[in-house]
Length: 166
Image 1 (tube, rainbow, N blue to C red):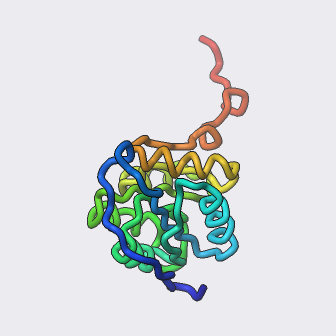
Image 2: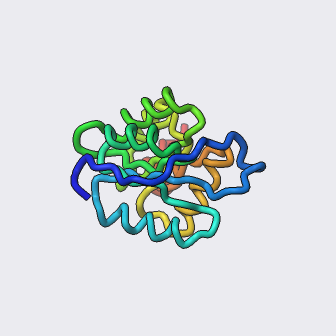
Image 3: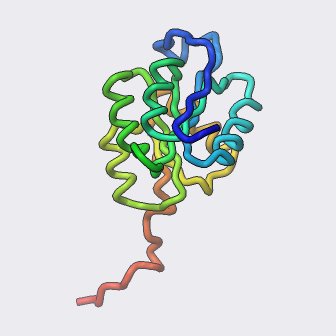
């Protein structure tokens, strides 16, 4: 796919409740790296209750794809050229509040986690996550849960400087 491109698919209305859903969860994948999009697509399409409805390679095309495809969940890279995933998340959550956003990043960055959460992201996971973890994450944020993979962002007690005892 070319940069800024959006794949096409049928448009369906967003279902309000996961518990009453009789159809697949609709997922949009947004990452500036085609290889990442292909890998995430393969993981999601292997699940009978998940459906990839489109892909985007930057934040601006992600917003357009959400409008065109009405996904339940967007798996969004944090850092992309042009409009960032965080900027796109903020716009998506503002314009399409029923759509959940799961941020996916290579960077264990406290600031990006905070800003993503403030932009309305339902989850934040590192790309080092296992395949079943991303699939579980999509289901969990679609169900309204908050998913913040902070374990690798928080310093371990052994790594912290020890305070002298007084």
